[in-house]
Image (cartoon, rainbow, N blue to C red; front, side, top):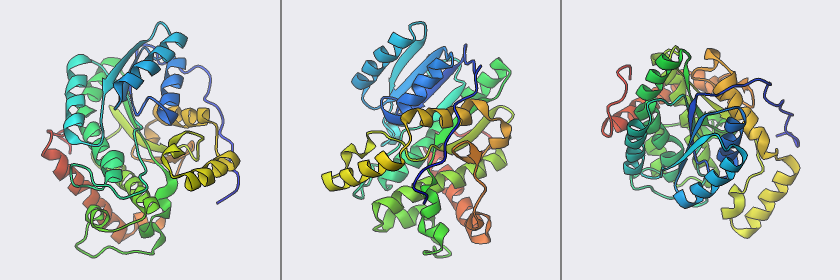
Length: 322
């Protein structure tokens, strides 16, 4: 790992999102807040702040309105830790909005101790992956119809992480049994915090590649990005010694939070169909590593898709192409 991260160029001038509606999950702080700011700076007409704490969301809304008084900004509750809350959010969006052009799936966690969500899944997987799959499938028809109205593809962009490259599967330190799925392995293993987080992000990469095989980018372009190490307050939840170590590393290697917005909006509004199903490291498409192209990697990837689809079918009716 290099000491310093490479520089990232600002967004090109002239981005015009007037007339468009965007949803940003995890929008009240950190990268999500920065994405929201930069969407509004680019002329976005309607911003939906999807947040777990609506009181905090209203505070953020007022701050954003002070800088963008002509924008329409709504706060809608979304708790990605449980399916009923995600289903309720999907229903509310479908009922209250006739058009959504951009869906930024940014909400995410990295827990220090292993936690199990109400769904039975390890919590990193629930928040970083499964709930985002549900949001993708649940809102896909609305984004498709919005593309028909606007005459341009709608966008779904996930906030990913290059930490998936350090998972023990990718590094070759671990192999799944022929009948073992990635989800069951993570749910049933006593993995450390870094591994659990890395695997949740690996599932994202695998899922999006499978999605792109089934859904062409004519109406909805779906991709993911990694903004690198960003100076946010996410480390505030860590125990004091770890927090000091992380903040020291951030001070040396971390990028300003505005860079995360540049990388996110590049993926969501600047790039085109060439990024469909792809993972962007900073602003460039990251080519699949050897394991992801191997027979075993593709087997596990197909399992990720099949199990995710089977689980979501019990909650909503996914798009016909699924």
